[in-house]
Image (cartoon, rainbow, N blue to C red; front, side, top):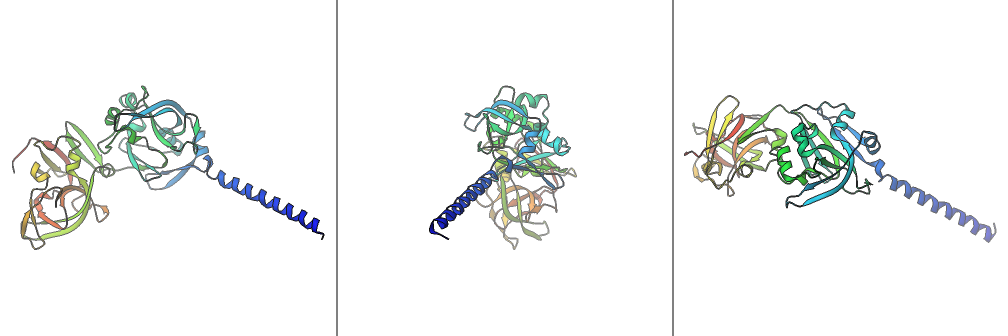
Length: 350
């Protein structure tokens, strides 16, 4: 083989190799395109199916101009969105969503928000405030993945603005924050929740919350036990539950006087003064000797427990009043079991 022929063959092989590299690079890039996008639908029985971008765009689309109010009262996200109503996705998947069911939407960064039946199937009151709830895949004519916030949860209220006031009237107690916190970006999953156990909190209006909704409230994890009237000590145990002081801040000015009445499923009632809510109760060591009084923010928190050792509470549950700190022991009569209702009542004395 001559030197010229060798160079010619080498050039051809180099050209073919370069073409192959460019071709493969193009295939790799296409995997990051819209066809690679999918949303996981986690059904009530925890089974999972995925919806691709092409499947989503085949469903009936909705387009509209909308925006939201952030926590500073400024308007954000204003533009034209195209997507698919969440109700249409459920219909496509054959999902029957009941009025007591919940939807948890999760983003790629782990952020979650929870939505109720009337967010997805709005009645006239909800529709006038929020419009329809959709999963958008296009913003101002730019589709995913070029639109870096999509897919995104959006609302289409008739006035084009989902305000903080609208949010307060269309979400349950668990949704703390602005209207913008409901517009989840980079959605990766829709999780369906069906729960029968609920808790009611009453202050001017009734809020009925399930186990999943309670987990969105300010939480506390700690240990605690109780001493019986016989002197026997139970615990300490490790619990997770609702930080009641921070949660009550959502209802009223906790610097003012108030008390609460806790009602169990069997009708048993237990009242707590403001001081007891803030942890001012006797505390004991593990030998049962009193060592002082508790204080919220220092060594004790009144908590509505829903988990024990990482699992849903069974003994005295699904919801139970407990005092938590660092292996603290408190009087057992404060540990109300089978909690069903928490009412705010006028201030009482111990």
